[in-house]
Length: 176
Image 1 (cartoon, helix red, strand yellow):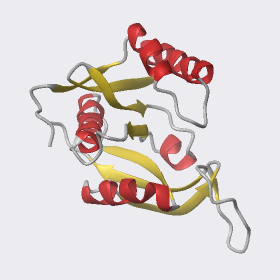
Image 2 (cartoon, helix red, strand yellow; image 1 turned 90 degrees about the horizontal axis):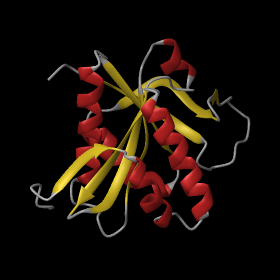
Image 3 (cartoon, one colour; image 1 turned 135 degrees about the vertical axis):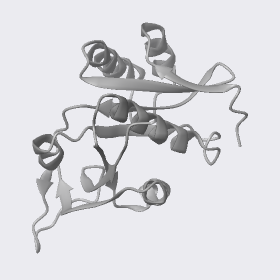
């Protein structure tokens, strides 16, 4: 486990954007990553989302967002904020960072008066750790089935098994 005296989570700052750009993924470019984080920072500043960065020993080890107006219709219609893009960099996994980020978002949502929180999770193997983590933290399926690009999947239809094929989960939260 991480020494939590050296671990902290805070809101994104403009200085983080270039650092995050240097940590881009193999399926993206630095320019795409900087553009995405610039948008997230702007949305954070405008109160659309709360972009949070996890640090350990002054280095970024993970991040995530709390989006207040989800594109998923069930969350949108029921005013359920959505946790998005929780990510912990390899080498820093299995140390409690993902759990800490999710708990942090629960606290932020509760402080803003929300009683429920939602998250979408992919269905293929790469999401296995996240699937188990969310269940362990008390998230349960919302009962609306799976979606593809935010639309309900229809029995008998075919969909690509990619990052847009999701099961949506919710959790009741209480003010701390």
